[in-house]
Image (cartoon, rainbow, N blue to C red):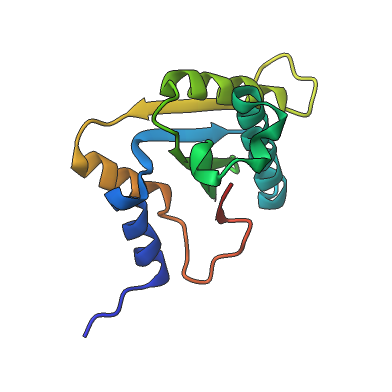
Length: 157
């Protein structure tokens, strides 16, 4: 009998249509450098709050979570010591998704905490059109997740 791992359960729930996640959007929060997962997680949390505040005002924290933008994050290090996060979004249907992505990019760039002339904090987004792409996106985003993951590697805001 095959038992499903925690990682497989998480992946299955990501592409389950009942959860209404926007798995057709491949979204990556790029930092362009190495940073700790704790710092990256804090910045993603701040970005999420900034985006929701711009969309819904100061009272967004009082709104039900299903009525605001939610982000599931998977923090990763690439072989070149570049820390980034794959994001799977849940955007309410009444919002323009491109506008939300633009807001995310503006807020993310604002969180770059150095004085480099070059902007290194960027949001990359690509759309996929088929169910196989949606499932592949969920699996790819969570590929480095382990069954004994730490809180700063995976979560949802």
